[in-house]
Image 1 (cartoon, rainbow, N blue to C red):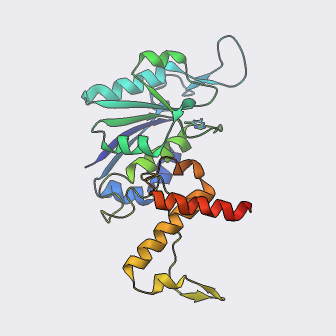
Image 2 (image 1 turned 120 degrees about the horizontal axis):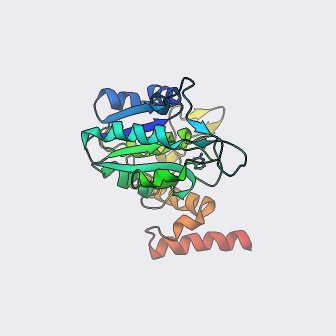
Length: 248
Ligand code: 6GU
């Protein structure tokens, strides 16, 4: 499988530099990922390559102009291939692991239009069936970082992108538990020891310890996740018992 996407941006170097300095570069070389970066300024028609302008009606900030985006879309869709249209916006629905998993299986090219908070001329709504997506409740200077976050989270779920097929693909948030703690060599450093059970070679004991740690860490840090997690009656009782010890 290959993830295909087009990223429409005013800062193409920002996108290229991040992809070039990450595992995504290898994924591109191996053909698992095919990212095209489109510089919206290439679709402007004035000497200054103007892609934004002051808002009608007044107010602060600049608004992304309609024409460069519409022309970039025309050039993009000349091949007629199916596409999924995503525009980054802090007012969009919240991006999540579930969205990443769904996008990673979508056979369409994903188009990411990197917006800016002051906005994009609202008439882009007529250019394609855009889905507005946000990465969280804070405001970025532009949608590039948001698009990169979504690209990265999605691409790592495409089979082969991470190399080892079983490697971490759907680790956290799928079963709604946080990860258990990890350790690597040395077994002791400045008196800090790795838990004995991990050095024991007893696979069943290690598995049970990891499960217990994942449950406890989730209970402590993100109790909201536990509500939809697959947790047995017995495990729930043990977690409740932890609370009683704390409050007494
Ligand atoms: Cl998708 N774009 C911008 N500009 N800011 C954001 C965002 C997106 N998500 C959270 N903040």
